[in-house]
Image (cartoon, rainbow, N blue to C red):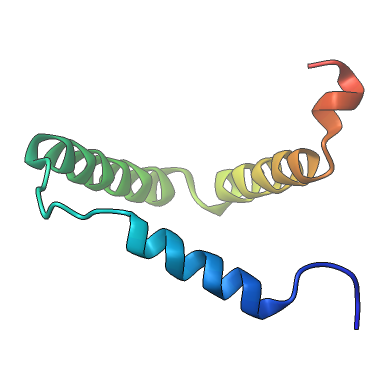
Length: 82
C-alpha cells in the first residue's frame, strides 16, 4: 500500500471533531439574507450578461478562470514572488 494515512485514523479523528463541536441551532438571519440576495443578484446579472454578450465572453471568462486555478494549484505565485 502507498504512503500516507490509513483510512480508519482519519475517520476516527473526524468523528471526534464532530462530537467536540457544539451546534447551537441559532441562525444569523441577516447574514443569511445578505448571502441569498447576493446569490440572486449574481444569478440575475450573469443571466443578463450571457443573453446580451453571447458565448464569446463566456469562453474568455472560462479560459481565464481555468488558467488562474491551474496557476494556483501549481503555486505559480511563489515562483513569481507574490
